[in-house]
Image 1 (tube, rainbow, N blue to C red):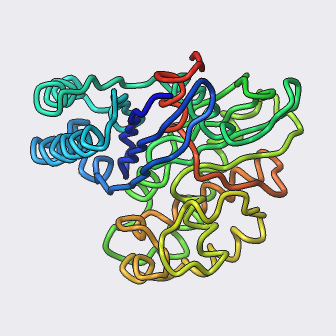
Image 2 (cartoon, rainbow, N blue to C red):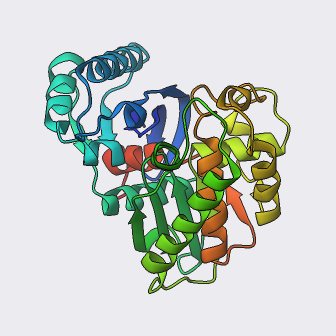
Length: 310
């Protein structure tokens, strides 16, 4: 049995998991989510500003100190879409190493997809040949993985996520207009059709992970505060997603942020993420999917401290 930490630096949030584990199983000790605003603050030239790097390195330093105080033997740290795109990512990595004492691995889309799959199915009992599909809708990218049992197969990483779509089509300070919503849906639909035309969409149950889908599940269940552990196993259908789109459309980002159970910093991006999910449901012919609160951080933990290989 080992106690260790796994931290996932996303485009909108930093997710930190402290867990005890042995082999292919793990038990959560602490699981936290902190807005990092990296995708929002990325500049037009593709660089992260110095103050954003400093704030995020300080956050990682504090998370590492807390995990070590609670007995973590080691900590694995990864970055995803926002750091893949950042032109000054090496500066970020160097600051993390010097200040937080951590080695930051920036994952490729393929690595992110495989680890996300392992994390998403880690609490499920699957037969070796049982088909299962996983979708991780993030802030900067979306990973789609087809697998069997606990082994990922074909995957694709899409450069489309809730934060980047919001920045491209909407205002961070005003309600989205019907025209803006329709433009996003039309262009996303065309892009997805072109990218996914040759994807072998195996008929199998779907598992959804990521902040957008966890938030949608909590809103569906009328939770009054953010409790991701309470929504594992909740089903989302196209009709559920349509209902939330109608709820979000035409409302100011501050109104969306004030909805019960809306995580800090997600109100600005929830509409774009939900619209993306709805288009993916159509393109992939998904009639229903199960939400999991597990994801990349769990797969990262298993890769470094369990028996999973990527």
